[in-house]
Length: 182
Image (tube, rainbow, N blue to C red; front, side):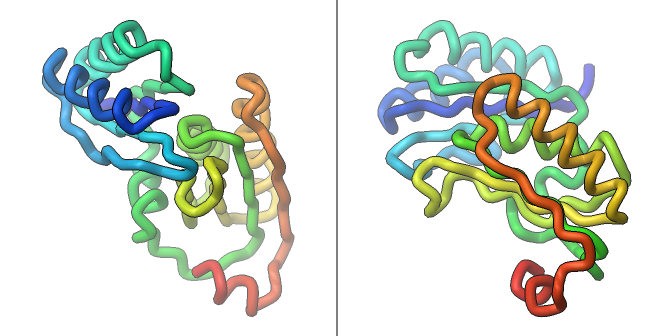
């Protein structure tokens, strides 16, 4: 049994709340986050053993499919995911800056996990649809080559679902940019 996280994103608040209730009643999972995000969508992030997260997400997808936008399950997520989501990442310096932007909430977390597992990079922030009309983004840093590899992998993962919007890499960003994002 391994630790896992899963997430569902719904078009409506009511469907999201009902699905969240069904997920915790289906299996032994913990709600990490359940809230509205722009533009009136609802996200639920859960954690638990991989089998429990699988069962909960499957129940949510099956029972409330009509309003489901997207979902994911990550077994053994990268340890930097949650600090980046909650804005508590400890970043000392920004050598190169990579940014990926998506059209939805769920794909950005999968992209961040893939990026962090692809190269030696530090996740700075994962912004999930808050104040962005449903779009999301991630920022990461590391050596230029590592950032390039991580961003390419994240872009490829998000593009597979059609949720890729844009990405950029800045080698050695100006100190004013560094200070603004840290």
